[in-house]
Structure formats: C-alpha cells, structure tokens
Length: 245
Image (cartoon, rainbow, N blue to C red; front, side, top):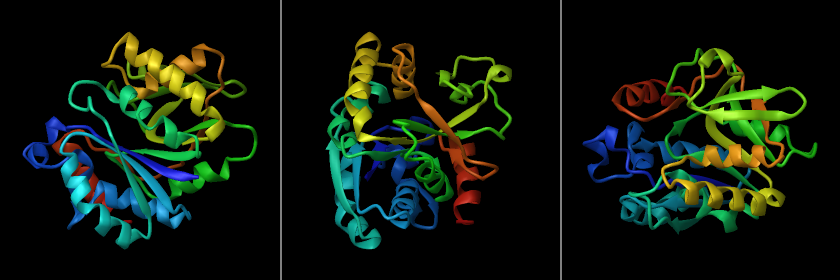
C-alpha cells in the first residue's frame, strides 16, 4: 500500500498565497504545509511510498521533493495532471490510475486531519471492502459539504454536495482507502465521469460506481478536528487545528 495525494488544484480562493503555490503547499503551522501534515500521517502508519498528483504551480512541489523525501523517509513520485487548471478532480484522480493498483490511502491536498483518520481506515481493511471513505457523522452539515447517504448493509447510496443536509448520514472528509482490486473499476468510472462533464468531482466517480452496483463502504472517524481548506476562513481554522497535532 502507498499514499496518494491530490495536489493539482489552483485554490484561487486562497490568493495571494496561491499566486505562487499550489493549495497543498500553503503553510498552516509555521513552515508546515497541508502536504507536510499528510506525508507525516502516511509515514506514521508505515507507508514508505507516496504518489502526488501535481498540476497548478507544480514546480513548487518538484523543488521540495527531495527535502520532503528526506524529512519523512518517503519515496515520492510526482504525477503530472495536464488539465489541472481546466478540469476538476475526477480527471486528477484518473491520472493516478496506475498508482491505485498498488492499493492506496488517498488524501485530498487541502484536508487538514489527524493520523487517527488513516488508522481508522486501515483498521477496517480485510473484510472484503474495496473502497472505504472516511466519514464525519458528527459535524452539523450545510450546503457546501460533500454529503453522503449510507445504507448499513449496502454502503454508500448517494454522495454529492447537492443534497439536503438533513438527509445525509455524514460528510466525506477527503480521505479514502482504495484497494488495488478496485483500480480498474474506479478508473473506468472516473473516465465516464469526466467525459460526461470535466467539471465533475472524483466523488461523482464514486457515485458512478455505486450506480453500477459496486459497493463503496465508509468508516466513521469519530469526533475529531479536521477541515477542508477552500478559503481564508478555512485556512484560519486549519491553522488552529494543525498546531494541535
């Protein structure tokens, strides 16, 4: 198993930080970035290799690659997304389709979260699940969140932002365990998704899988502090949280 980080996005709502940096390299605790936190989590659970999908301002990640490898004891492979500034992240995850064959823990490059999330996902392995989403069932939801409806027996039924928060079981936090045996099915679903509309999310690819009868499971993460950093308010929350890890 390896780590996988989606770090290709422009993060325009975080300007001026993202004038020169991808969102994953915006500092959240001194010089520590979201990418640093994620790599540290991966190393703590015993991963030794990580693939990072890069696009917008990718040169900044390339410049830090060797230093990050030394700091966290990881081998990093950078995967170029040639449409990072044009298309949404369904295509970005599809770019990593070969890496997924090794089984991965996928983390969005803008999600500040504790290592307990990775540990929770790994603890759920071994019971036939092929894709397991980290799910926050505690947070009060609003319109912007990636909401999920879960059937206790059949797994994920719907995953979308376009849902009444009152209907949702919880929020997908942007971290997933994907077994290698799911790689081909997921890649095909992602391709169908971005070919239908390049502005769609990879979570729409998960929905495509569900629609095809593929079971996608969840792992509740408990009452923990985490944040997806989309704007400056989120960044302030991320900085409050990051210094506690």
